[in-house]
Amino acid sequence: MSEGEAPPPPSSPEAEAKPAEAKPAEAKLDGDAILPATYSEKDLRAAVGAAPRKTGHAEPSDDLEPRSFKTIAVIAGALAVGIAIVIFVVLGRANTDKYALRCEAERVVAQQGRAFPPWGFRALDGEAWQPLRIAHETRCQSRETDDVRALERWMLAMILEEVNVQLAAHDPTRLDETEALLKQCLLLTRPPTTPEPETLTADRVAQHKEVERLLGDVTYWRAAAKLRDAASALTDASKQFDSAAAQRPRHATDAAAWAAYTRKLAEQLRAGPAAGAPTLP
Image 1 (cartoon, helix red, strand yellow):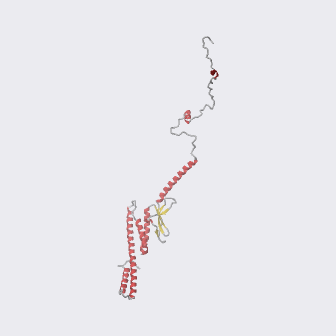
Image 2: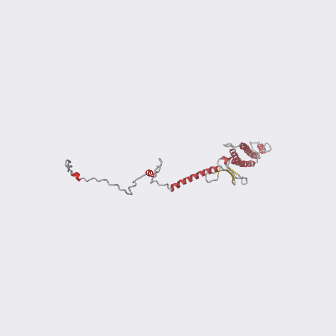
Image 3: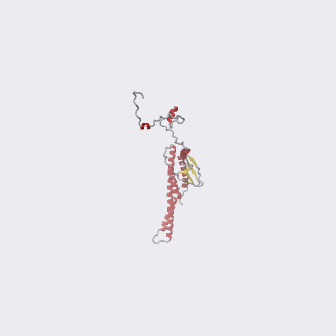
């Protein structure tokens, strides 16, 4: 120790016991320490000079699996079903625009195309489209059209032909049937809900008037049937008066006169007021 230097402080036992601090060890540069322990796609893009991903796009995630084949198959099946439904609807609408008059063995049926499978035709509903009963020998031709008015004309012509046959037969037992057919004709001659050509309108009006006249024939023959019944009743009464006159009743003395009178009335009813009177039995 030189002269003038202060003597070193005395060392304490704690200082002597404390070991010297170790200097930090140098970082070990090996292959594992070059790359960071974690990284992101954004950092990698910046490192290689790629443009960053646009904002709003989700970052790819390793835990998202690709869409399975089952999901794709379900979507494809749903699309196929939807397309099939659309096709069925279009075909159904096109088929409902078809109409037909079908001649069967004992009746004529008005039909319309079905809207749903099975395709084909079904009988039309409503009083105007009641099937027409016909005989086996009746001439009938099945036809198809896309105009319901044409179907009305075909059905009307068939019914009127049958009505005229029935009225010409003078069969009082079929008057109710004939009247029902004529009322069906009135429905078929009603004006349509949509405009139609003037020629068709004129034909419809003329047909309606013809149906009204045929209904007059039905009323006429109903009255003729009542006359027939009245003539039959008078004939029976004249026979009973003849029987009473033969028994010589005590209180009635004009039985024979009434027998002759009622017999004459029955003959006059059968003869009618002039030629062409109703044909009575």
